[in-house]
Image (cartoon, rainbow, N blue to C red):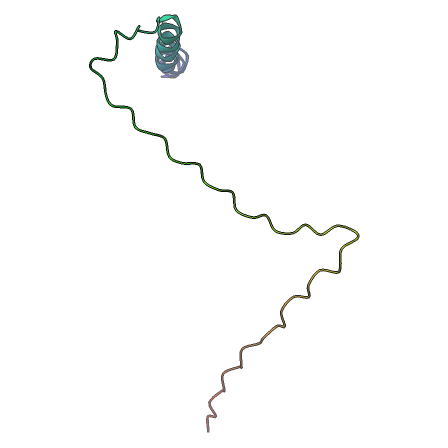
Length: 85
């Protein structure tokens, strides 16, 4: 059984890799098709308008004021324990 495992790993699993290399080689060598005019093609959709960038937060440098203090911590009240008699 060890020989078949070696054959499977070294030969059979290389077939998809060789196929992928062949497809890439074919795609690289293929010449682009020349467009035959504008008589029959899909209509060109206009591109979306550019989105305005959001304002950046102010940057604090060494000469700026101190950073704002964090909000106060709030602790949740502890639930009461039942008294058992």
